[in-house]
Length: 323
Image 1 (cartoon, rainbow, N blue to C red):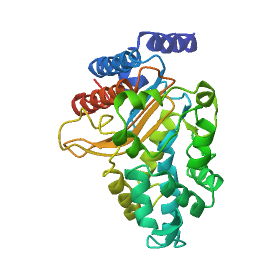
Image 2 (cartoon, rainbow, N blue to C red):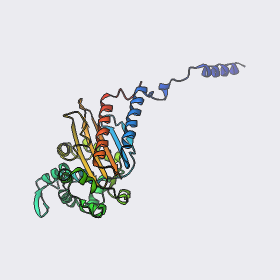
Image 3 (cartoon, rainbow, N blue to C red):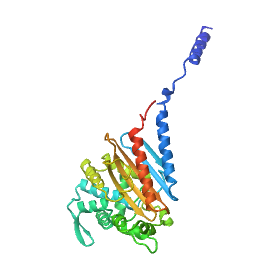
Image 4 (cartoon, rainbow, N blue to C red):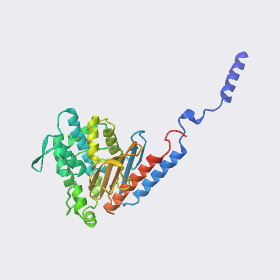
C-alpha cells in the first residue's frame, strides 16, 4: 500500500507540473521580424510580375547567414556572371604559386598580363579576355571542377564564352561584349537583338541557381576558397565593374560599396554582387531574369528594385533571433 501511495504521488506530481514554455522548444519567432521577411518576399514576388519571363532572387546576410530567396533553386543561364567562377579559378592558381599576375597570355594574338585580363573580364565583361583566362585555367572542365571542389552545388561551367555564344545565338543576331552592347546601341536596337531563346534557357549547361551564385560569392568574400589577399584583389576589381549601371547599384544610396558582375544574353538579365551597408555589414545578392520579352530596361529595373529592397531590409530589420 505505501508503494502504491508513492507511485500515485509521483504521477500527480508529473501531471500537475507546469508545462514547458515555448522557449523550451527553441527561440520564439520574432513577429516583427516575420513581418519584415513577409514584406520583403512580397516585394520580390511583385517585382517578378514586371516581366513575362522568370525571376530568381537570393539574398544572404554574410554575418548571420540569413537567406531569403524567390525561385532561389531554379536554374538560370549564367551568361557572363560565369566569369566570376573563371576569375576565382585563375586566382586559385595564383594562391598555389603556379601563376603570376604578370604572366602574359594571348588575347587576339597579342600578349596581355593576367592582371589586365582579369580587369577586362570582370569590369568590361570582355569575352576574349575571359577565354584567354579559361584556356590558362585548363578549360571549362577545370573551372567546373574547381567550383565543385569548393563545395558549390547548383552551378556548372561547360563552355568558354565563344562556345556559349555560339550555342545561344539567335539567327540574324550577333553578340559582343556587354560594355560594347550597352554603349554602342540604342535602347530599341538592344532589345531587337536581345530576344529570348527558349531552348537555350532550358539547357542545363552553363547554369546556376541564385542560391549557388550567392554561395560562390560568399565563399570568396569569407576567404573559404581563396587566400584573404587574393579575395580582396578579386572583389576590388569587381567594385570597378563598368557594366550594369542601371542594375543592382542603380537604386542604392550614393556611395554604397558594391562588388558585382553582370550577364546579358537572349532575353536574360543577370547581376550578382556583394553590398556593404553603412555599418560595415555585408549581404550578397543575386538577381537573374530569363525568358523576358519586355526589354532590358524592365529587367534592369527588377534588379535595381530587388537590391534596394534587400538593402533596406538588412539595414533596418530588427533582431533576427528572439522576441
